[in-house]
Image (tube, rainbow, N blue to C red; front, side, top):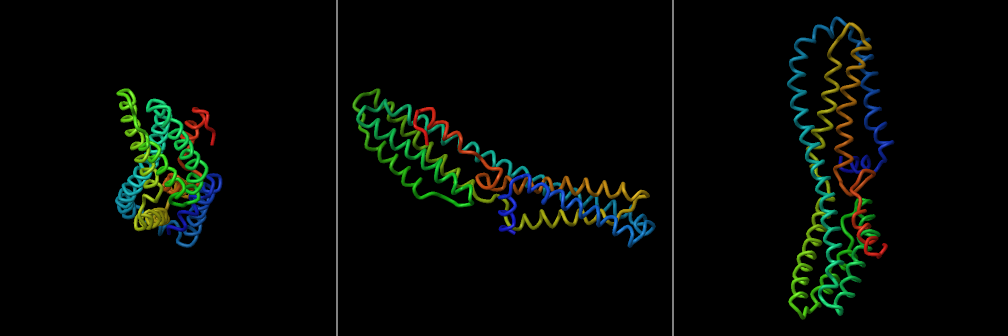
Length: 265
């Protein structure tokens, strides 16, 4: 199941929508027509009252599960954006405060901050976009930035104040990167994926037991229900890995910081 989810999320949306939404919708509509021809209208109409009551309960249970999954992956995706913004903001602060700790250490801190930003944008970002976990070079670059900051020795009170704020910014940068890496994995457990896709199949299959006078009306209703359910599933799949696939959190805020300080990646 996990392999299939990763494969689906790696596809561009113009491929995911036809495969994940249009195809199931067409299959369900065609199956509705086939079941009508095999079972007949009278048999299906006899099920409407009892089946409608049961389907109402089934639909509510699945709606709760589907809605919960959408909210969880969306919050995780949004937290990924927040982590990147936090990391970029802290990196910008480090660049701006470097000159405040003395001319001797400022150049070393700026060089180390620039190296870290470049490695994150050019190496760690693509690794995450391919489904990887972390760049060891980015970890080394962060360690180098720590070393450059800790080697600074402020001489005046103003330099000490800037140095304290620099340490806070460095801690924020490290926390932002840690959050970004932790949020890069899947949010939805394997058992929940099984429940989501299994519940979708059960819900759309249940519509086959109903009968309406006009078959095309039932086909359209079943198709719309299928489209809505699988659109939600596609959204969950696409956002489950915030830094992987076609729909992912961008590292542009960090690129912008490097551009703003005149240090292009």
